Image 1 (spheres, rainbow, N blue to C red):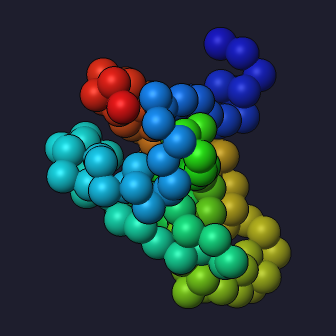
Image 2: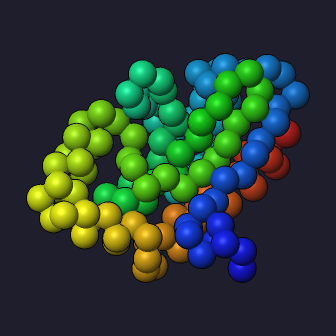
Length: 127
């Protein structure tokens, strides 16, 4: 287990044969059954991400990228501006203690496994 695994970092690079935009990539995978759930194209700040249902408020599988280069990752910040604001408020109220749940425990491990599984399914599609 490397340092990334200990810290809960899981990022898997996916290169496609065509330079798909994120929206085109989403169209290719949106009806594929994933263990992580049904993907959605979600506005996250100024950009979009492909987000899967949250495991908890600190763990979510997301896909980012463009032009045929994508990354499947475990994210500790669920996609969507409304979720970001709610998490920031909760962090402020608890003096940062609520964020620790994303760093430890079974939800983190499950999210990392789902990120790998999601990447494996997409890679098998040979896009």
